[in-house]
Image 1: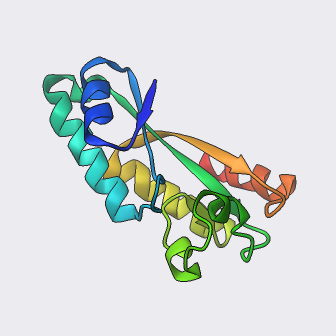
Image 2 (image 1 turned 180 degrees about the horizontal axis):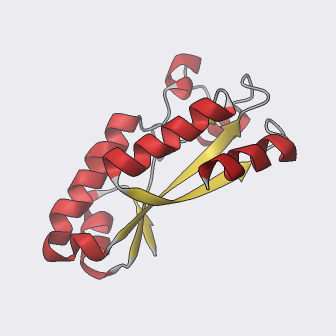
Length: 136
């Protein structure tokens, strides 16, 4: 697996990696449109390999119980406007049902099949278990 966000890294990953993790945050917080563009770039660069590549994405701020908790994203980009942080693709907030719908959208529209979650205190183990169970 190779993770990246920039053209050079993603182009190299498209030629060599079995799994490519699309980065959703770097010096700025990427939106879902940014992730969609990066995914399309990878698949274009992969050419004939596109069907053999598994795409991955990380939700680095999971706030399903305490939706006000944006602490992880603020660590990445201190001083960011709250509105921008709330639009970050790497934020998984809202209800469990909304989170499941969002993940399914990433699967269906972006062909992302592998997800990682950074569980924080903003989501209890019980809520996290309900999320995982609903995704099965």
